[in-house]
Amino acid sequence: MNTYIARRASNIGPYNAPDISFILPPLQPSSPPPNYAKNGLIGMSISGAGPAFAAVFTNPFDVAKVRMQLQGELGAKVKVFNNSFDCVLKIFRNEGVAGIQKGLVASMLREGSKNFFRIGLFHPLLEVLHPDHHAKIPIWKRLIAGSVSGAVGAIICNPIEIVKTRVQASSLHHKAVGYQGYRYNGLVDAFRVISRQEGVRSLWVGTGVSTIRSILSTSVNMTVHSALKEEVLEGSLRWTNLGNGFATDAVCSMFSGILAVAANNPADVVRTRLYNQPFDTVTLPSGTTKRVGKWYAGAIDCAGKILTQEGPLAFMKGYMGHFFRTGPHYIIAFMAMGWMQRMVTGYRQGQMDTEWSARMADFHGRVAAAGGKEGKDGAAPRRALEESVWVA
Image (tube, rainbow, N blue to C red):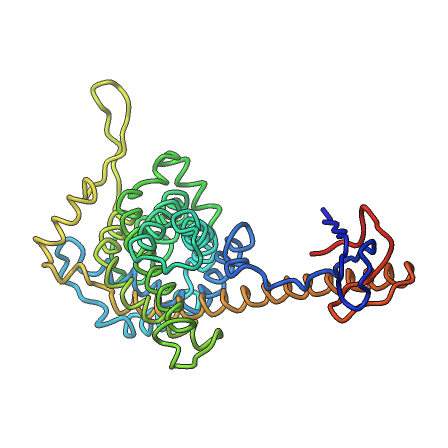
């Protein structure tokens, strides 16, 4: 809605006429709000698009991470892969490009949908927790916002996580690691088969551990990334002169990735084992049936067996594959997101400037039509009007 201003003048400017009114020209608009491209549907869409794009480049290490985490399951002595790079190389030799890019569609869908909530809700929640833009945001508020957004993303997108893990774990090679009883002809077929054979509720198996993992990952990732970026742009690290561009996005995301992977890798190992284990259907005394894992009764049982049969270091299995997938993934994703945020903000700034230019042209036209001349202060004398030219 346009705002109109008309004022009575008294001893103003060179006119010195108490009965002459003047009107103010439209004010030049300021920049869009700092979080314009991070909040709302625009921010959530950008948060999903960046990680989905990054998945194309980092999916091979995601496949390696899953295979490494399944190696040695339940005390199996066969060691197929020496490290994550060896894993990627052997998968490529034995299964080709299709092998190292297994589950790519599921991975892109997972990244796009999960981060739509996981990253997309972080800044809106932070706005609620800390509406004062002039005061520094405490770390604990960032951790809470990251924990809540991470939990929401994990709960909603658990079905895609299950499908992605099973597709990436499957292999026809005779030295395949982990349970190899799942075979699907694509993403849609996986959802159809799981729903028919195991029930729709089975798509949320492992939601608890997945949620814990996402809380750990998101709270650390988003807290470190957002706080470090603010320090680089406006705080104690301004001396780096990185500016608001790709360099800052890359550095902040790399450091946040190192800490985020360390925080969630143990839960990630447990989750991978739970997702990929075989299941039995048992009949309860009441006559109803229930799906029960053959190898693990739940997250706590799984963690206990890993600890007793493989040792505490087993919780860090696949860390390098996890990091070499997550580290570059965070860098590419946040660089893509940062670029899109700057483009959207710049586009909005252009719209605001164009609107202001149109208002200024209208202002000058009205002044000319009234037969007035602008004064030194940008005001124009004319007869008293109740409503006149809009101002921003």
